[in-house]
Amino acid sequence: MSFVGTQIVETPEALKVLLNQVQGEKRCFFLRWPHKVSGLCRNLPGDFPSPEGQVFTSDREIRWKKHRHGYSVLVLSQTDAVEGFDPIKPNTEWETCDREAHVYPPTETRFPKGIASDGINIGQRYFRDKKTAMVHFIASVAK
Image (cartoon, rainbow, N blue to C red; front, top):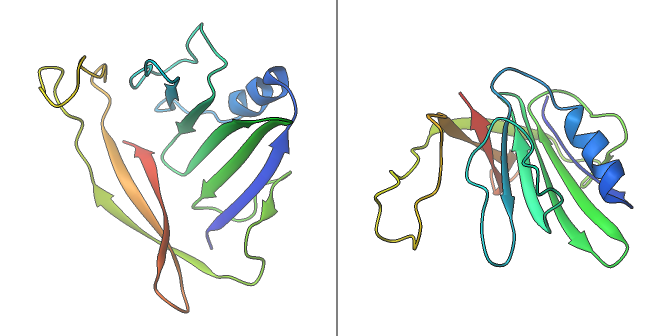
């Protein structure tokens, strides 16, 4: 059974500890600032923290966004409940469906600067409510 949950993290240091718990050889980070993005990278960039970002593996994605009182964190997991996270809809059964995805090449003209991918392959995982079949989230998946 899949799991979707949230938690509030108060400091950048606590966020970094949480993110470093996500392990795996295909772990991937993507950080966003108002003026730039990190691109896809295997290690947490040195200019962390960013106001927004995500880390993902083949089985879960963690997203964060800065708020006045810390960071709001969302987990999208293909496995059962994740410790420390409260389910966003406690009585919802989530089902997942994986899809292919492609990274644009650095020469793509729709972006002012190419987005670095370092040869990282990704996919997408749709999280939908089993009763309504409505897709609520689309997570990145490291391949």
